[in-house]
Image (cartoon, rainbow, N blue to C red; front, side):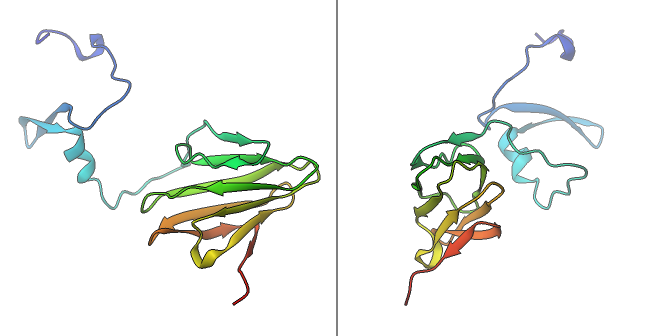
Length: 150
């Protein structure tokens, strides 16, 4: 393997973080783990478009939000439905958007800040949620956020 060209190696399709990468630093050959590389990647500046994972969850009935995918598309039926969002991890962002309106609405329940509920009534209603301080907070969007009476 030591005599193989880089272009001839098999591509890695997923990483655990413990893999070793080859780097040249100050004209010296060194190694670094994937975990170390990304641990030092704070304050990253991204230029151009930022693309979110192209796989999305599609919900066409009441159900539970999948936190393994960053985006959930909602399609309402003729009647109203309830969707639930599980506990996230600190710093997690989740985006929900209603893409088709069959006449009903969706109300999002879960571990929301201030015991709020979020209602999606029409195509284009969106909610961007951030999980922090052990709660989901709506940080943007056009969906209606409802707070319980005091």
